[in-house]
Amino acid sequence: MEFVILAVVIALVAIGVISGLVVSSRRKKQLPPAPPPSAPTITAPPAEPHVGEEAETPREEPRRTIEEVGLPEAGTPVALEEPPAPAVPEAPAIEIPEPAAGRLIRLRARLARSQSTLGKGLLTLLSRERLDDETWEEIEDTLLTADVGVTPTQELVERLRERVKVLGTRTHEELRSLLREELLTLVGTDFDRSLNTESDLDTPGIVMIVGVNGTGKTTTTGKLARVLVADGKSVVLGAADTFRAAATEQLQTWGERVGARTVRGPEGGDPASVAFDAVKEGIAEGADAVIIDTAGRLHTKTGLMDELGKVKRVVEKHAPLDEILLVLDATTGQNGLVQARVFAEVVDITGIVLTKLDGTAKGGIVVAVQRELGVPVKLVGLGEGPDDLAPFEPEAFVDALIGD
Image (cartoon, rainbow, N blue to C red):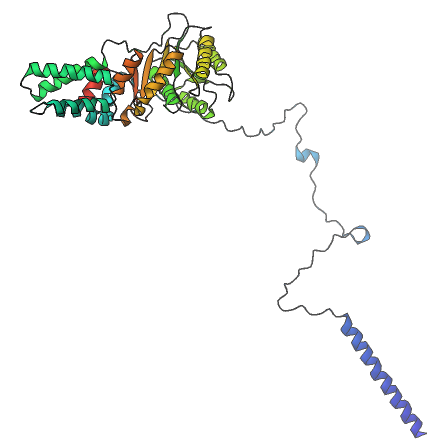
């Protein structure tokens, strides 16, 4: 009997031990694995709001009545906030160019390179005690190097030899006076160098600018507008060089600086149409002058002739051209004369503009181009500044070449 009771007790103990182990293992399986030390801490999302039976009882808050809110009375206009006005770009400030009269005298220092080669070079040679054949050859070479041209050089040397022989003893002042007289004769003082920017009709004066691209043609057009504005004239610009978008933009910028309007057309459009519209606008506005910048493509003389001839014919449906200015780069020297001949055959050139005269030792191109075309140099460019385009004055030019 005791044995049976002992066996039952042992069985109950065994069953208890086994049950504890099972419960323990189940509890271990329900626990999630511990996160590794390096894993970031995850924040639980906020609890969702309760709805239906689980919704919270709303809190009591004081509410305003209609009287307290103060609604506007019927018919009272409601002020709405206006959107901010778009920023309007400021118009560029209008510049007042300096007077054109006497500019060449003020800019005489810009002729330093031509001065040392042509004027002072000749004066130094003529001041030698003995003027032999070798010295006269040097004088001739100096003139040719300065692009005076063969025929004008021979004429000048011949006159100088004759006058020096008659003069006998030569002081520095006598030689300077002699050289000044002969150079003035060579440059020419009997040309009419005034700009024809006034029409005899009740229309603006019409100026057409021609020349090869790269000579400073568009810049010259803009600077000429400043010259006219400085003289109290109102100007309209015609951007008829439609084959270069940069030329149109550049000309418009020049015009805006002095308050001159620029008439332009589409890129690659008909230049004659733009020129026609520019003159039409000039007449409508009562402008004093219209300046037309033309294309300078010199591929073939035939194409150039057709294009410029068409511009001229179309413009003259409004009024005759008063001035046709040919722009030449002074640094090209004798090569510029080839261009001059072509343009002279295409249109009737009435005047010459020599640009970049401050950057060359070839001041004699003034003489050569006048001899070639039979028309005067009317304007010279002596720098990159906006007011560095000066009316050409022979006396001031020669004085600048010879120096003090």
